[in-house]
Each structure stands twice: as structure tokens, then as C-alpha cells.
Image 1 (tube, helix red, strand yellow):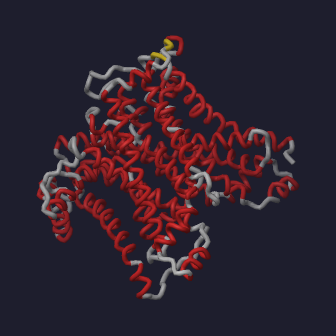
Image 2 (tube, helix red, strand yellow):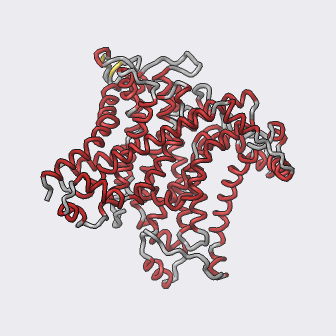
Length: 295
Length: 303
């Protein structure tokens, strides 16, 4: 998995010249990405008049050197426009779902990866298929079921769906982590009188921790950004997660002319996953290809 | 080897996951499939109130302009966007595996949009890049002497703008999968090719491409699967108040006929047809997956 890191390579003019078109293409893409995000952050700290003035970056730097950035945009977005409520909702949904996903998926993945039994291949097959089932196929029956149980527009239904949608990938992702643990561990634990269930939670689960942490980060990003299911199942403003909350806020703020606060809300929404990615990009990128091997 | 204690543990460990599979995947898929052959108005109606309608839902859908347009829009996005994303993903994967410096940095930057909420990303694109006159694209067009405003989010350019913004986010994901495929190819192939005097294009077409056919197939499937739900948020961002022809997409049309229109009372609630939309979208995924595996069947490298 770990590739040798080639930092501080001596400068080889011929090689670098040959790679120049590659650098150019990477540079163009990176420049655009930075401009997109940088401009948005700048616009979140200036007035609507300055945003319409055209020179947002200029206005931003002028305010920056004068210690005059418009943090009021953030105050407005967070407080008056209720983004704080959606933010807290999403934090609650994430914490509960991520915990339960692991409690459900890790034991299942362990059983599938280390034991031979009759329906093993069937369950693994369903896992692979479930990862490719479009969400449009599952929302309607769940919605009728929730209606029958008077649970539409409830936090429980939302959390249940966040868990359901992420369990297959999590089981699939953890398979190799359990499979690659040393094979004698269970026997040794059994000799010491440890029951299979205890052996899992005490010995195997902690050993698979690198995989569990990585897949949880990945699941967090998925749940934080989830929009389709939330849009269907969170009609009530009080239970809206952050993506749906932002969508409604953006429309409202455009009409009200709160342009600075609109960009501030967007920044608040992408900040958690963005910051996580800056610090943990290698872990996250490893989890992406881990799951993509079988499409 | 599986003792009685282990057997009990396996059952205990699998029950929650199997419960999830049954409740969230198996039961819904079957019910949606059956529902697509029945006339059902409101989604809440219990099964005994459904009336069998054969293929009426499917036939009916293709008589509705808005739905037909959503299919055209979706397939355009799937085809044109798919080619663009696979091409760009491949180009950047080849660049990043060719020995450039700062590889991890470039890789992270290109992947970055994937971790950002589509709604936040859409807000940036629509209100900055695509904004009339002083937006990034209009300024670039202006600089090159073109006519502005282009009206990037208007009815003529709208779908292409949506395509550009959506694809921008997907390139990093597809690129990563290509990189992981290319990195599995032994360096020896490239070294002996270099000795024979092959240039970068020879190496790409005669070594890399044949050996990552399996990854190309995976990426076609990934692109098709992710488009189904991914496009929903983007269609909403470009057309927030109601369904409009240039931006309508099947999942958005489906939502509209399940719950009734946003603001417009024109759209009748029709859950049976909504189920048919779901089945058609799933069918596309199945057809593409099978077709992709047929096209790239004879590959030697199992990815």
C-alpha cells in the first residue's frame, strides 16, 4: 500500500522539461480550484455592494490589511438565518449514524472475511449489489413504510437511512482489514477461554482500527453532504440536515440580497469536510480507491 | 472448523446487517419493481388500493414532454460528461503517475471538490463562475473579445453549464481509480519499452491502456451509478423553484410526481409512474454495467 515517497528529488532539467505539459495542466486545474474556493471565502467577508462591485478579491485584501473584514456575514448566517440549527442537526445525525454503522458493519465484515459458512458468498454478493442500487429505487417503499409507522419527518427515519445507505460500503471496505489479521488469533483466544464474541470486540476490532477510522471519515463526508434522501425525508425545517438547510437558505438570501451571508453559509457548510480533508487527505484518498476496486 | 460457539457468533454478527439489507435494499427494490406495474396515485396508499396497469406507467411516461426532456438531458449528461470525465481523469492519472513532483498535492487538489457539499459547490459555481457580466467565465469571454453576458445559467447554455460544474467535481474521483490501476502495472514494461525507444504516447496506447481496461470498465460503472443521485442536487441548484425543461432530470421529475410540484400545481401525483422512473434508471445502470463488461471482457489483468 505504502509507496516510496520521492520527496527532495534532485533537479533534473531534462526530466522536468519533458514533464512541463503535465505541470501546466495540473497548475491550471489547481489555480481554478483555488480561485473558486478563495473567491468564495473572500466574498463571505465583504459587503454585498463590494460583491456587485466586481473586484471581490481587491475589496477583500483592502479590508484584510485594515482589519475590517465583515464577520457580520457569519453572525447573520449562523444566528439569524438558523444555520446553527441545521449544523447541530447534522452533527447529531453524523455521530449517531457513524457509531451505529460501525457497530453493525464491523462484526458482519469480520464474520464474512474470516469464516466459511453456507451463505457467505450470498451475503457478500448482496453487499456488492447494494453498493450499486440507486437511491431512487429505495426511497418510495421506505417512505410508505415510514408513513404506516407514523415516522415520516422523524429524525429516526433519517438516521436509519443514513445507516442503511452506508453499511454495504463499510462492510465491503473492512473485509481485507479483517482478512489480513494473523490467522492464529482466534485459536489463541479460545485456548485462553475467551468467547468468540469477546474475542472480536477485545482483540480483532482494535486491530482493525486503521480501517475503521478511515472508513468512518469517508462515511462522515458522505453523510454530511447527503442531499437526495434528506430532501425527501426531512420536509420539516426543525429536523433538516445542513445540506438541505443550506439549499433553502441560499434561495432565501438571494432574494433578500444577503450575498455576503450566502457565501458565508456555503463556507460554514464545506468547512468541516474541507478541514478534515486538508489534514487527512492521504487517509481519505486511500479509502476511495479501496472501495472503487469493484465498481 | 466452525464450532457451535462460532456458529452462534456468526449468526449474531450478521443479523443486524442482514436486517438492514432486507429493509433498505431487498424489500424496497422488489416493492418499487412491483409498484411500477400498478396505478398508484399517492405514495402512502397500501397495496390493496393499487390497481394493476401492466406497462401503462412506462408507456405514459414517454408521452410526457417534461419526462422525455429529463431523459434527453440525463443521457446527454451521461454520454458527453462521461467521455469528458473519463478522458480528463485518464489524462491527470497519466500525468500524476509519470513522475511529477508534488504528486500527493496535485492529487489532493484535483480530488478536493468531492469532499465539498454539492449545494455549497453549486452556490459557488452559479453565483461566482457563471454569474452574468462580472462572473469568472463571462470575464474570460470578455477578455477574449467575446459577447457577454453569455447567460451561462439560461435556457441555452444551462445544461452545458450544469455539465461542466458536475464534471469538474467528478474528475478527481475517476482519476484516483485510474491511478490505482496504473500503479499496479509493473515498471518493467515501461523500462523495456523505453529501451526500445517508445515515447509517452506509445507507452500509453500499447501498455497502459490495454492493461487498465478493467479499470475503465469500473469507472464507466462508477460514473453511471453516481450520476443517478449526484445529478439530483445539481438540477435543484440550477432550477430551485420548479422543474424547468433545460435542467429537469429523472430523479427530480420522480420527486415531483411523488410529492406534487414545487409551486406549480400542473404536475399530477403519480407514484406508480415514479416507481417506473426508478426502474428505468436502475435499468440503465444494469445495461451499462453489462455492456461495459462485454466490451472490455478480454482483459488479462483482474483489477
